[in-house]
Length: 187
Length: 187
DNA sequence: CGTGTCATGTAAGGAGTTACATGATTTG
DNA sequence: CAAATCATGTAACTCCTTACATGACACG
Image 1 (cartoon, chains in turn brown, purple, orange, yellow):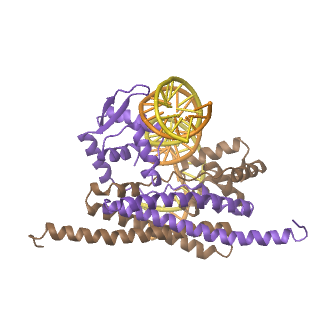
Image 2 (spheres, rainbow over the protein chains, first blue to last red):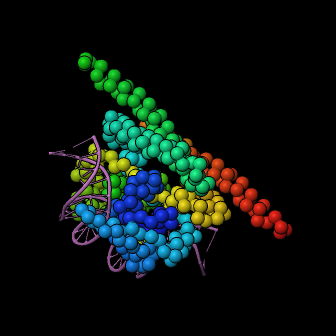
Image 3 (cartoon, rainbow over the protein chains, first blue to last red):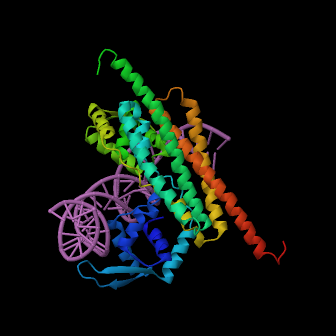
């Protein structure tokens, strides 16, 4: 899976500009994909040269002309090829957050608590967004799409739960530390 | 977070060779990090030049000499700098599996079921490995480390659950499809 | 006698990011 | 009046992967 595959998939539904595709990456696709303009525009132009998509230019004033891209028959075939290629195990999951927790004993609990709270907030935000989209669209969603959403929602929920339990445990320890260190001071 | 940060963290505990570091990446770190020899060896050599680590050569016969790397004081400082730098939100989670599910309505249910089963197996394997390591080491593990493990275990468990529910739902649909299509045939 | 483990390294290439460049129009 | 939105694009760079090169020894 690379940007090209995803873009082909997106264009299966309807024709879009690079700017709109980026919008989808920030929105619907943000929980399993992301990409920057620096990738999208060059990839779209390369895809046009390879006849996977075709460009329609809409002249505008005040802003650059709009390039609306439509998938070609060849593009559809290639997207189908991708879907029929072997599934890539998504090992790659590199997580700065988990890495830091793994090495958390090298820093103060306060710092670790900070990481946990920040991540809690971040995941809660993503979860809310996902749940909202799910509740709005679930009537029109196809079964595999629903499974995709459920995996996301359950995965986030479980992580959140674990983070919160961790926070409770850690905050108890921070408290104990404070009581020991600050036994003689007052404030 | 990059390979250098992780290697520094690993070397905080004890001195190791590149080969051994790779072993850890395949093992303990595999659920939130991965890296290849093609990254590790050049990075280690660069780190030595930058005085983050120092090399001790152990002469061997029959195989290349062993380069055992030890973190320097400067390396420890740099690792600490990393831990005190802002947490990077690990958005990047690009998942081929979820991507395919999202576009699953373009292919047969059989294919989707294949993806689900393959991923189910894969996650189950990872989960088992994580649980085992957890049960063996939990007495000697520091609190943040425990939280790290719990997040992994709960995350995997939740995903597995959602995948299994999805499989049940899909297999019912596949069955219905078969009954409609094969109504006239026998076998 | 093949496969796995030990052990290091390089070269070529892929895929992506960030930062820059441009600039009107809308919204708070 | 500042910030966001619309809209495209390039250049430099980072980081990583794959494949290659070498080769002994142990295990079954």
